[in-house]
Amino acid sequence: MTLKADWEIAGSPVDPDSNERLFFTEHEWETVEAATARIIPTDHDPGAREARVVVFIDRYLSGIDYIFAAADGSGFLKLTGKFAEAWRARMWDMQQTYRQGIRDLDAVARTNYNTDFKDLTEQQQDSVLEIYSGAPQPAKVTLGTTEAVTTFLQGTFDEGMAFFPALCLHTKQGFYCDPVYGGNKDQIGWKVIGFPGPKSLKDTMDGTYDTSPYFMEGEYTWEDLVPYLRENPFRPVGG
View 1 (cartoon, rainbow, N blue to C red):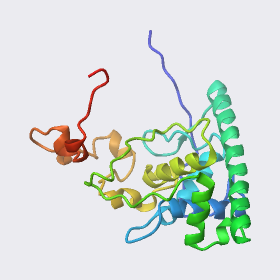
View 2 (view 1 turned 90 degrees about the vertical axis):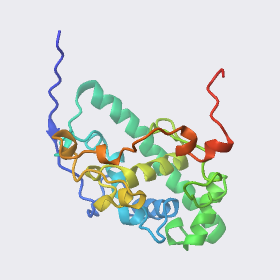
View 3 (view 1 turned 90 degrees about the horizontal axis):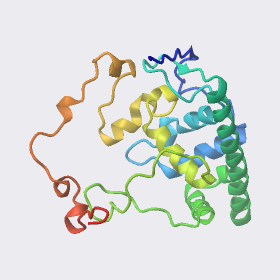
């Protein structure tokens, strides 16, 4: 038996330059934009602000219209029935998490600096995020050093997450996502890490985009590819 799902395509790719707010209030938008800009700050490379991560997060939280991009990048799959009900419930929970988290972040800012988070200096914002998260600001990451590789994948599932871990996850997703979702404007995130991504999702479907030239030839061990493992060898579970 063959199962066929006919998905209706709705909407269009998100405009990263849009300032239209679908979920956030103006204050929430500015607060989240400021916080993401401290999570991936602008230095010699563009950061979350330039990549328009706040647009990605706003659209993601807005409901069910910007969840799954169509394979050709022309728009988004329209969720119906139980799929729509499940995502609405999930988004409602995350919406409340963000609304309360922003209020709490402002409360910490006012307690320590007598003003809202978005109006603080960058140094003060870093301090507030440290207090709020209960963890020190991470050191700069330099690829290829043993100090940098202390954790691997965070994962992509945000259900049940508290505000700050969710904000960090969504900031990274918005910075590195396919631009169809509104973040990663002009492929900024990909360019920062040297990833030669496709010009559009359509290019991944018709063979236009090909990654084979970027594969390394020859025999390599994990220790060759990940210097950290030279001094800290991988131990299989039970090994």
